[in-house]
Image (cartoon, rainbow, N blue to C red; front, side):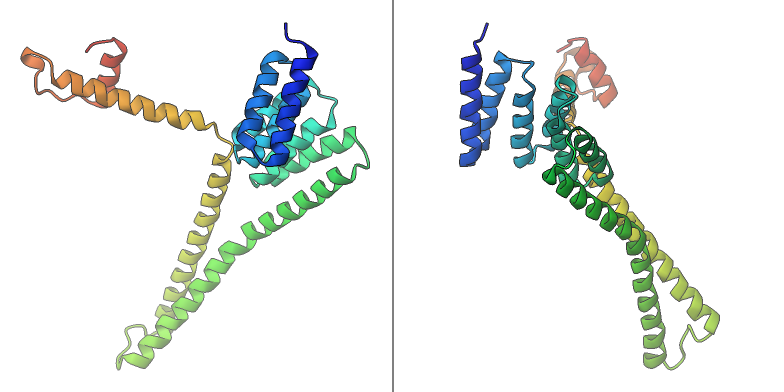
Length: 245
């Protein structure tokens, strides 16, 4: 069984590496310490901080959650969780985490400042959701009016001479601009959500695709009536699982 001195030594080495900006070595030291003392909540908190600095958001959040699980009455665990959520633009979640930290540690200035930051971020984000689509519509109106004016100036017989046609064109382009802007905001939200997704899941998908290709190639090299036959991915997957070469 590991001694407390060994754990403390690894922790201090990790802390020193953090101060020096050597985050990879810091993670290694904290991980070694965790292996020696898996119930030490402060080690997960420290490693969460370093992983956040390395922009490894998924793993930083996992460590923050583990800190909370091991020590649910410790404010820093919720603060760590809030910091990861704030860094990934999950402002409403960050506010909840910060407020839980403040409940455990009232009047803490750093937590109160974090709540202020998260509140401002949430307000700006909500305002962007409301304003950007209408900004897109406004740009669409400008483009529509510009097209109508340009046609009247450059063409002797404008095809959009009727006021109804001019209005319909302008409204149509405005609606298109509104839709594009809303789509952009949706894309931004999806990108933010992806920041907290497990990166190993994507690696697993790539590995499976490679295995399918290998299986399909092996099947085409078989003898007799199998030679030259191409299989679908589903068929290749089944044959690969059966262990056929």
